[in-house]
Structures are given as structure tokens and as C-alpha cells.
Length: 409
Image (cartoon, rainbow, N blue to C red):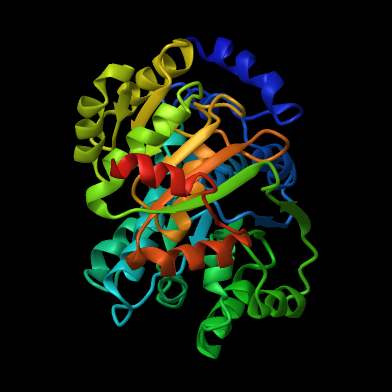
């Protein structure tokens, strides 16, 4: 599609924000259809060059990575004269948990940094952007060479300081310093050394760089950092309205799940329903077992283009009321009110709980629906974590006893 046509398509959706043509050109390939509430509010101050403090609901699907990527790419120049060894233009600071932490905790922070790099590279595909990742202490020489040639470096605080002190990159060349997940970088459990390292980075870059802070929630250390550095950022607050979403749990053993699901779907057959599972194999098995309902399925092993085709068919065909999916519904593909029932066949992690309902179109406001989660004794602790983290109550499903009775028979 011609860049001018694409630009015109997105111009009205972004209002007064005039994104570069080469950024917008990437949107169709990324299946990016419309800006999120976060992008509509946060991109203006970021692209104006103002220090910006963003507190955004801690759910997936809000477009936080894309917001940062758009802001960075919009503000930097990738011409030959602005591409010189050591003259990095932006750094994205991220917390990589140490190897002494659990494997899962460390991997989740590494995965977040990798996804940030992938988002920047995909959105900057037509701009010739070079984005380097420096989150490991191994093979330092290779990382340093890559960082020296990059426009953007994503790194842990310690590695950024190493690059500065060894004169691999020039802190005076930086135009932007981004705190990704600042509530993790400046969590209340980090030691004083980590806080001092961030203040050192600020001192070396503050004269020339714009600061963008993205956080899910305030912390004492983050508040202290903003106060002590005399930052006066534009503040953007994005809250989430859960009032129209009803959260239920139904205690079910693994062996009983399919009968319980069958009974629930029989009772709620008039609704568009998304059933989330943990594994790709489960989605295919359920699709075969419930073939009489003409269900669709999608999972993480399918190409993104194929997933969009499945979503389009699900929404366009009134007779297609059932979709089995893993945790990879493309954001924005399902609009508010198009799905009214979510069933968590496998109970998700704390963070994926929001990921699921936001991407299924439960995006706050007055239009929501029901979320029914199958739980067992083993994951009741995770249920409590979800309730505490999102400040919600997951009630016992009121139809539970009758569902149990029918399923048992």
C-alpha cells in the first residue's frame, strides 16, 4: 500500500500527532489499526520533546511498548550525518533480574527487553534504525561493538554506566533516556547502589536528553528520584475501569474441565465467547471436541497473519460464537462489546489475567462482560494474587452448583 494512502488513513486516528511517514508505513505489516488511549494521551508530550512521566495500568494490551517505540523513532534522526560511532541517540533502561533470582523471574525481564528491541526494529523497519541489546554480562566485547554502532541501546543500568565510563558511547550525544517499567527499575526492594547508578546516569545526560518514565505504579524510590533530580515532567495517568467486568471462579478438577465447559457453553450459547487455554495443543483438541459449535481456534504457533484471519472470521460470522485461543490475541483486533464472555479454561498468571481480557475487548468503560475462570486448589494462591494486584474480587460463580450437578451427570 502506498505510504501516502496509509498516512492519510491514520492521520484522523492520531489527531494532531503527525507521525513520520516511515513509521506509519510499518503499521499494516504490524496489523496496527488504531491508537490506544495511552498513545493518544502520551505521544503528544513525548513527540514535543517534553520530559514525560506516564503511569499506566499494569495490563497487557495497553500499547506501552509501541508508545515508547513511536516516541523514540519520531524524535530521533537516522540520516548519515547523525549516525556516527559512539553517538547513540537514545537509551532504554530496563531492569534485568540477577541469576540469583528464580529462572522465571529472570527470563520474564529478559523477554521484556527483547520484545522492546523487536518492537523498535519492526516499527523502524523503513528508517534504517539500529537498535542494540546489552542485557548480559557475557561476551562484553561483542555487545560494546554493537552498542557503539547503534542509534538506540536497550540495556541494564549497570551496563549503560559501563558504556559511559569506558567511553564506548558518549552520554552527551543522547537525545532521549527512557525508563521502561520504572516501578521495576526503582522498586522499593532495590538497593541504594541501583538508585545511585540511575542518578549517575541522570547527571551525565540531563543537560541534553529528554526523559520519558513509564511505570505501572508509583514507588517510594521512583518518587524520590523524580523529586531529587528536579524533573518537572508532563504527567499522564491512564486508569482502568473494571466496573462493567464481572469476575467469577469455578473450582473444577482437571478431569472435569471439558464437561463443565460443555455445560457452560450450552447455557451461554447466544454469546460470542473466547476460551483461553495455556497450550496450543489444548486449543486444537477443544476445537475438535466441540466441532458441532463450529468453533475457531488460534495459538502462538500460527503466523500473525493467520491469527488475524481467524479473528476476522470469528467477528464477521454471526454463527461463529466460539473461539479457542492461547495468550496471543492481537491487540485491537477485537473491539469493545464484540465479545461478552471469556472463559479461562486454564487459569493464567497474574499478569496474563489482564492480557487476556484487554485483548478480548474488555477495555474498560461501560462495556464489559463476564470472565469465568476454572480454578483448582493448586492455583487458589494465584487467584489471590490477581485479586490483590488488580484490586478486584473474583466471586464464586453463582450458577456453580447447578453446573456441577449437570456436569456430574
